[in-house]
Each structure stands twice: as C-alpha cells, then as structure tokens.
Amino acid sequence: MLLIKGGTVVTSERSFSADILCTTDGKIAAVRKDIEPPIGSEIVDAHGLLVMPGGIDPHTHMEMPFMGTTSSDDFYTGTAAGLAGGTTSIIDFVIPEVGQSLFGAWREWRRKAEKSATDYGFHVAVTHWDEKVSQDMGTLVRECGVNSFKHFMAYKNALMVNDEIFLKSLHRASDLGAVCTVHAENGDVISFLQQSLLERGSTGPEAHPLSRPDTIEGEAAQRAIALAAISHTPLYIVHVSTRQAALAIAEARLRGQPVYGEVLPQHLIFDESVYQSPDWLSAARYVMSPPFRDQSHQEALWGGLSSGQLQTTATDHCCFCAKQKEVGLNDFTKIPNGVPGIEDRMSILWHYGVNQKKITQEQFVALTSTNTARIFNLHTRKGIIGEGADADLVLWDPASTRTISAKTHHQNVDYNIYEGITVTGVAKKTISRGKIVWDDGVLRAERGAGQYIERASFKA
Ligand code: URP
Ligand code: ZN
Ligand code: ZN
Ligand code: ZN
Image (spheres, protein in one colour):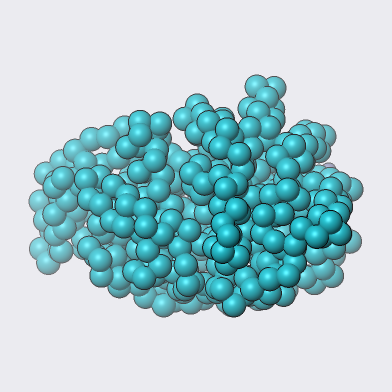
C-alpha cells in the first residue's frame, strides 16, 4: 500500500488537506485527514505539494503511420515521457487505411499499444464508408470499449472524409451512443491553396500557415456543428486554434447542443512567426495542423478555457525527427505534420495559465483530466480523487522550476518546441495505479504496465 501524507488535494471542484491511501491493486482506498499508516505501507511525504489526478491526454499519435513515415515516439517511449510530466493516461487514435476494416485496425493498434507505460484508450477514425464500417462501429462500441470516433475534414486524398460520409458516421455514432471527434479544417480549400502556393514558388514552411487560413477552420467547425446537430450526436472538436472555431462552439453550446472544444498548449503560446525562421529546419519543426496563428487568437482560447466554453487540453503529440521533416525540404506540403508535447503539457499550462492567473488550480485539474474523463465516459475511474477510483496521481510542486530541453526530455524525438523555456510548476512524483513511476527526476516507467481503458457507450 502507498500512503500519501500531508499534501493538498486538488480536484476540479476544490482544494483541501488530506492523506490518500492507495491499495496494492492500484485503487484509491481512502481520502481523509490523518490516515494511520497500515503496517508495511510505503509513505510518501507530500508536504508543500499539490496532489492532483494524473493527467489524461485525449489526443496523441504514438507510432502513427502518416505522410509517408511513422511518428517517432512509440507507445512505450511516448507514454513514459508522459509520466515524467504528470500524465498517466492517453487516448490515442486508431487510423485505418482507406478500405481497411475498423475492427482489424483496432486490433492492430491494441497490439502496438501493449508496450504502453500508462493506461490507454482509443478513438477510432472513420476514413471511408461502407456497410462493413457501420457494422464495425457497432462491434467496437458494444464489444471493444470504444465510445468515440474520429473524422478528418482535412488531409484530402488521405484521411479526409466528405460531408456525406461524416454525416453517415455521425448518425451511426448517435444510434450507438458514441461521441464523434473531428479535425475541423476545410481540406478542399487547403489542397487548392497548397497547389497555388507551390505554383507561385512558395515551397518553404512559411507557406504552411498561408495554405491553412483561420477562416477555413472556423468554416469547418461550423459545418461539423451543423452536421452533428442534424444527427443529434455529441461533437468534440480537436485542436481548436482560432477565435472563429471557439465562437462556433460557444454559440452551439448556447443553443443547447453538446459540443466540446479541445485546446493544445502550443496554440496558447506560439504564433505564426515560428514559420519565419531563416533556418529551414527550425521552421519545419513547427509544421503541424492547424498551424500556429496570429497572436490575437490566443485571447479567445484562454477565454474559452477559463469560461468553460472550451473544456479540455491535449497535445496532439506526434513526433518527427529532423530526417523525417526533411522529406519536405523542397515542398512544404510534404513536411510531416506534427509536434511533440506530451511531457510538457501540464507544466506549460500551469506556468502560463495558473501562474498568470488565467485559470485556477481547480480549473487546471478540470482542463488536464476531469473534463476529458467526463466527455469520454471514464470519469468513474479517472480524473477524480475518490474511493474506488484508479490511483493515478501527480504530486505537483507549484514552486519548483525546470528548463525544458530536448537534451533532458524523455520523448523519442530530436527537438522540443518549448526548448529553453523555464517553467515554474513541476511534476515531482507521478503515481500510476498506485505505483511511483516518476520520482523526483527518476523515471521508473515499466514497459507494458499500462492497461487498456474500456469506455462504455453513453447508451449502455
Ligand atoms: O499536425 C498534426 N496535428 N498532426 C497529427 C495529425 C492531426 O491532424 O491531428
Ligand atoms: Zn438512426
Ligand atoms: Zn488533427
Ligand atoms: Zn492529431
């Protein structure tokens, strides 16, 4: 047994002094003041520390085949890096190839993820449509613990689905009691703009944001919301990066529509100037979609998070090393899209959010775990601190600092987008299912220790 003594427990609701007792099978057995240590228990001194639910990152891409290559963090290295930053669960994406069975792809991803150090679940992407897809969606929801499906409105001629397929999938998900998630950018417009930029000789990373204007994220978000309304399906919009998309979500919510928005910490702090670097690789390393934007959008993202109109933070962790990015040396449309971040999400959000008084520490918990757990129906086990919940915890030192660097991070990638930033607010210890797996700078991640998270349908 593990007894965490003397800390301040922070939940999405309140902060209070209490000890936490964890059982050897990884559950929380008690949360109250002055718990007597059971014989043989290990005691962790949490004086001066905040004890919060371990982070849940609902948007990662470990070892994902994408744009002709495979993201460099696998399920072990990526989740281990997450533990070093206080994240104890991920929801990754099963991406079937066009024509591949959803169920077959889910089995393939289950195999790949067996090496995970944290617990993991899956959203399953719908990349085409036929009767088999519809059947597999049923199997995945009823028998495989999947309650969310993903749709790409971008990446034309690859992952993108048109409105008809998206609507069919939304309708099927609604019948099954599942949530639909969506990457909202207009892929047809992007494809056209990419071609015209290339024809005009704009081949470098500085063309990337020009090919993906803010307006067409807003347009796609509006369209996704309209389609979800027709099919009465809860909709979760990933990586909201614009004021327009944030507004569309807020307006839908005012109409009573169940629509949720996710924000990535990188969109809160970087702007489009990252693409202006004279050094090709420095700029290419920030190529992700949606791109970094005019700084004025950041106000809406912070406002959405603090007002509750945007509910979650994720990383979209998707790593590509220099050699992989360099495939797009002469053509920005071939630079693999994606940036690392799972290790630093919590510190970045704390440093720029809580320390800057943009959000409270309780909101921090809501935004890093609790809201995600509620939206994706795992809130009886994760994102909370209470008897019977999984003992996934982070002991947070709000006063400690660290300087982020690729030289010291645990992510399997040769750069860090936050290189050189010194953050105040650090994960001191991370506890996964009752075991200390990150201990003041020492990573004790265990390959394969993570378990698959089954998430029930909302109609179950
Ligand atoms: O650029 C990104 N975000 N890469 C990963 C795939 C996606 O769109 O989420
Ligand atoms: Zn129906
Ligand atoms: Zn995306
Ligand atoms: Zn993604």
